[in-house]
Structure formats: C-alpha cells, structure tokens
Length: 173
Image 1 (cartoon, rainbow, N blue to C red):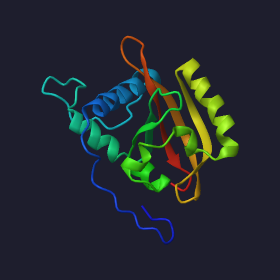
Image 2 (image 1 turned 90 degrees about the vertical axis):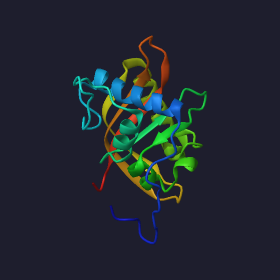
Image 3 (image 1 turned 90 degrees about the horizontal axis):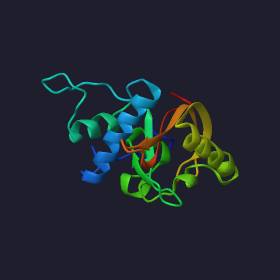
Image 4 (image 1 turned 120 degrees about the vertical axis):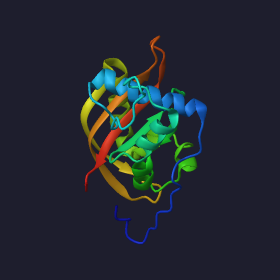
C-alpha cells in the first residue's frame, strides 16, 4: 500500500491482546454474518468438527490483515473507537492507541458530522446500512473518501448493544 507523500508508516504487527476487545471483535464478525449474510473475513481456520468457531488470536489476525478498513466504536454517550484494523489506521494516520482514544464522530469533518449522526441513527434503527460513501479526515488533516461502506450494530444474543462497526474501501483502492 503506498504511503501518503512524505509520510512513513510504522505499525506493529498486531495491537496488544485484550480479552474484552477480543470478545467484541468476535461479536462484530458474527453480527456482520447474521445481519448481512456474508463473511466479513475469510474462514481460514475451523475447529476439527468444522464449526465456525475460531480462536481469538485468529479473529484478531484476520481482522487486522483484512483488505478493507474495519473500525468499531462502543456505546459511550460520545462513542469512542475501540478498534481499527491495519488499513484503517493507515488511512487515519494513527497508531492503535491514538485511534482507540478518538471519539468516532471526529473521524468525519465538522461539516459532515450532522450527516454522519443521521446515518448512525439510521443504523441504530434498521440494524445496518450498505453502500455508504463519505469523506473522512486523517490526524494529519489529509482528507480521504471511503466507499462501499457497510455499517452495522454489534449486539449480543440477548440484544444488548455493544457498539457499531463499519467496513469500507478507500476511494483509491
């Protein structure tokens, strides 16, 4: 992936393990499958019995290396990102620790935050939205377009909301 002009990207191979985040990542993948009807990440590994169960390490690695940007935020009053994969962090010019302190509304320019809020409310009501495109802003101030985005709710089996996630392509891909 080419770096932005004058910018060097040094990213660790994976963020540090975190059991709570790992559980939410597994839920994120499962919710995508149940809502959209497609696999978010390749099913490279299965248990001996052929089930869809994977280890947390497998979820983490496959999400991290996915060829599309994947981000997720929690349910705080001003939701904060709890995850961004390698491609997303590259696009936002941030490392994992910086990104996971960012309120998700700040991923959009100030003028676009109202439209983004309406989109997120629509996701909350309907469960997911497909085909979204929008301008985003990196920490460096560079603007970039995300396209073909799917945004969905992350809910557990009891229906409790754990946040929202998005998968997208950068426009130049």
